[in-house]
Length: 272
Image (tube, rainbow, N blue to C red; front, side, top):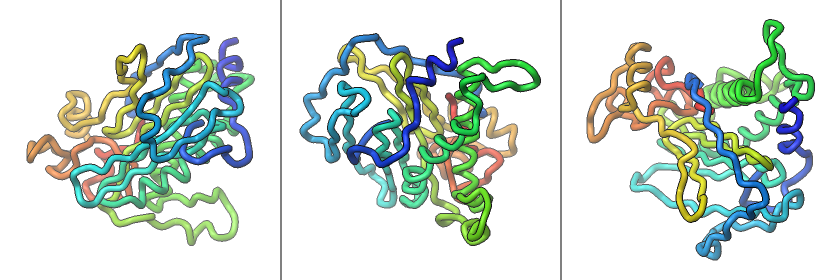
């Protein structure tokens, strides 16, 4: 069966990362990219300009990672790359209104994902109403639950502790109501790249010097996103670009108190 074979290549390991700086759906669409076996990734000429650069992954010496944050035009933004090399997991979290939520996603998203994978019966297959879910459905289910959990923690609807002393004290928003973040996560294994995206950050694969988009931006003027927002009672206003309620230029976000613009139509559900 394909499930154990694929997931054997994305085992989550305990312990600290060997180096800082890198690696590892309301939407019903599923996007997959298959890597060419035996083809080492091209070393970027700009690698020397990376602000954070790590050594090859111990599990896969050909895997090198780095990050180079670039500040946007807004005066108050916050972005955070997530360094989790042993997991072959890459995460980019681009904050708006402040950096608190982006930093929280950086510190928590991979932890929640690891817990979710541990709870799922991967080897035996996850059963729902007696039917086995295929691998795409498994990943969509896990990622959707993971993003929702982090969003609940950020907005103060859930504690980062499942139980025990201190849970109530942790149930509070991590930032003001207008602060949020995108979340673009890619899990890389020997045969596939599984991408989960929420917001307008984009996952791009360099293949033969050509960029290949692995995710679709969540913008309010996207036909399906506009329909979803309006069905939930929201409005898309063209005010210096299409914006939710005339304010936010993305239609999905991990956010504190719904960025103050309404949780029903600003959702954390990723497309996987």
